[in-house]
Image 1 (spheres, rainbow, N blue to C red):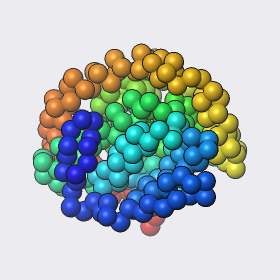
Image 2: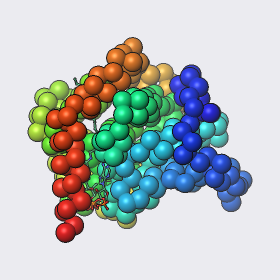
Image 3: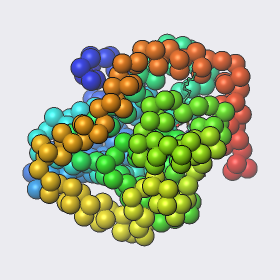
Image 4: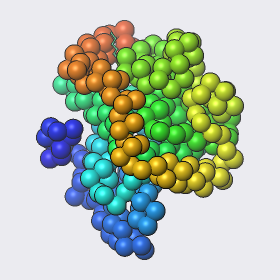
Length: 292
Ligand SMILES: CCCCCCCCCCC/C=C/C(=O)SCCNC(=O)CCNC(=O)[C@H](O)C(C)(C)COP(=O)(O)OP(=O)(O)OC[C@H]1O[C@@H](n2cnc3c(N)ncnc32)[C@H](O)[C@@H]1OP(=O)(O)O
């Protein structure tokens, strides 16, 4: 069992937390890694680097999300750490977003369980007391973009293939209101309106221009840049920064928290529609055929 935002939820049998490794890093910090979430601690600096490792594309399956939620919970409760760098261990991909296979051909109970986990990861990241820096070292569509948007600062590697955005409409689906709220808070209403309707995926230069990311750097400098940004943010006293972060974000998070169950029901009925299932299947098929 794991504690998720004040509620105890059963982990699915498939989530093998027993396989989690806990060792001591060189600096004495506890290093823990699940199958798909690697944590590299730097206790002296108070920073943990989380590397997403769910090949081939870091799609956010239920198991992967559950591991990530548990990892964040552990870090949040460990006073050693004040900052997290979120990055990918999969070459060229930050995250392909929500796992389409979790939203296709399953039953309503599964959709509800999955959507609760998606809400949970967003709330955990968006409301984290720690400083979160996204070191975006690959493509970052839809749910991948959303994860980056929860962070306090985004550094994107300069590669035209590393496009970022909420492209849901291209799949024939809709970005939920809290994805939209997070985007509006980041790039403003007009730019979000256009980006969401057109399902825009921005290459680095445009992503920087529109404010989707804060910095674009050569790929080999992404981690060092994230570290230097982190030290700038960690120079601010925690209590002042945390209260300010909460002041800026609470209303947006409360919007979802108050409507959590209704949002799950909306998702389940939307995703269960035959027409939506068909669109998703066609999209998945296109992805598969792309290679041939
Ligand atoms: C009343 C209103 C109520 C509203 C209710 C809400 C409505 C629903 C809201 C849902 C919000 C959804 C958010 C999402 O995140 S949906 C996912 C969107 N993601 C994408 O569009 C990205 C798709 N992927 C790609 O573009 C490329 O894969 C990528 C650029 C990421 C990498 O390209 P690359 O060439 O390196 O790799 P491949 O394309 O060959 O992919 C490798 C294999 O991975 C599979 N794959 C890719 N993406 C996904 C995915 N998101 N989920 C599952 N599987 C994925 C791909 O099919 C390949 O598989 P095979 O090896 O088996 O062929």
